[in-house]
Amino acid sequence: MKGIVSFDIDMTLLNHADYRVPDSAMRAIEQLRKNYYVVLATGRDLDTSYSAGYREMFNPDAIIHLNGTKVEVGGEVIASHFMDRNLVERVLHFAEGKSFAVGLTAGSEDYFVNPEYVTIHDMRRWGSSDRRFRNPWKLMEMEVRTMTYIGSEEGRKQVEEAFPELRLPPFSSREGADMIELGSSKAVGLGRLCTYFDIPIEKTVAFGDSMNDMEIIEAAGIGVAMGNADEELKAVADYVTTAIGDDGVWNACVNLGLIEGTNREEEDG
Image (cartoon, rainbow, N blue to C red; front, top):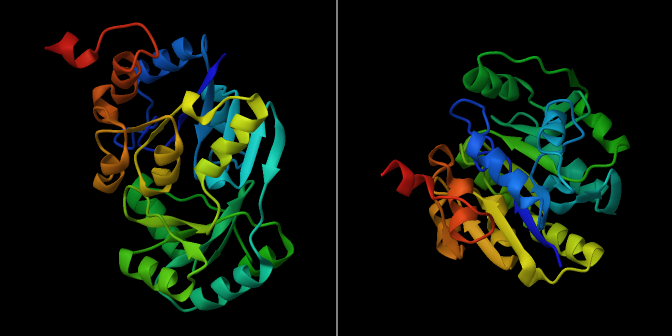
């Protein structure tokens, strides 16, 4: 019976220091395919223009998009959850005039209240911003699964306090957060895949680095926190590997017996 190995993307597979995926991580994924379904479990929507390239790069067997609110196998969506429209409306009103942005990206277009804070974020991170901002109130006519918060930690806490039906696990950079309805998570998505593939949860391994990985790290048979992960995540993980830039994915896969090879740390030593 095949197992499942799931990976977060940002700062688990994709190193934000150079926006590259370590070669060792790609080699590990190729070896894993022999005995495991390879799954991407991300806060991103890999159907947007900004993220679609990662679908092609990793060629996963399944994708847990948007923190478990869209689960896909072989191009078919097998599970989906949408936010309550009244909640979306209240969040948009709350954000008006605040010093943070709230909204989402759909396809190649961006729907944000206070979009200037998204531009500031992009310029700080990439030195450019090519967003196609549209009227955020169009979201009231769209199917919204999760939203995105861009701003300071102080603003993130304001939103969480105002909306107890939401949780806002911060990005590893602490420059924003996912906005997720309670009851949705990557772990829920993993459970859907276990049912689909008829695999017990004990036969799963999940890799992650930030707070939106908390539930899946706890739920998986083996939860792996990257060496660069949040300390809170490391505390609940079954295994803490080296950092993304120190072959963390490869080393964990070798040390846990998921693939054959040599621990890169020992090799370097």
